[in-house]
Length: 298
Image 1 (cartoon, one colour):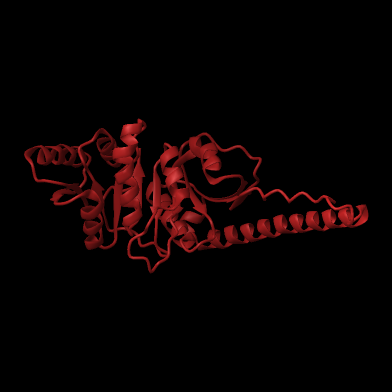
Image 2: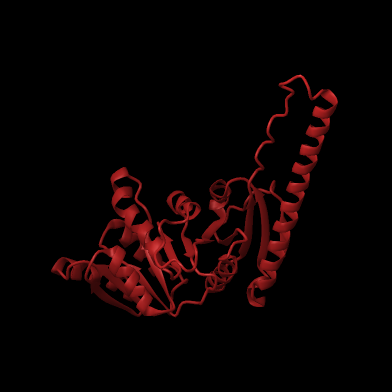
């Protein structure tokens, strides 16, 4: 295991699985999910934690003319000492968390594990490492008792919208290796590219899959599914198709819940404003409503 300081530049080979750890409830699942992906892809695993820069201290001034310079200087010294202590404690806690996460990684994956402690906003750090990334794994933290999440974790949504590499999102404190996968397919160019990525990657190879289209069972819908099915079958995938009635935000979550230990595959947001409003809103809704791991592909 290696520990890399914040100043070290990221590698340029796009083969690393990055587990983005925040110390919250989903952290064990993020580690387990990233280790599963690293094992499936025979790829190195990096355990990453970001420390945000501390908020600046409030200005201390003698606006009344009563405090006096000696008391003001003493107050500034105490504030600076507290700020330094807070920074040191945050770094110690972060390193301890990374050590625990590294110990959780299975032995057959641990040989290729590194730990990264960086300063800054998560999205900025991930964009710096994007050239070396094959997959980012994040946790979306919400109260476990909430039957329907009111909104998607804003950090997760920001990452999925901005990075170009695949992102896997876990929403439960425990990760169970999926026994199959479901591709939410709508016939769009974004969904077709997601199918192509699945077909050309070893991540899901050997697992049974389902192409699911939410909507009316029209001839056009069947043809779209058949074309995508043929593409996956040509790469050796055991893939079925299904048209489920209703809006994607209702039909797809119900379908994947019925499947049990599955993985949902989605196409990511489009780049145009109209595309973001249409595809982006569906992508966000499915990540928000599905409790199974979600793999988002550009």
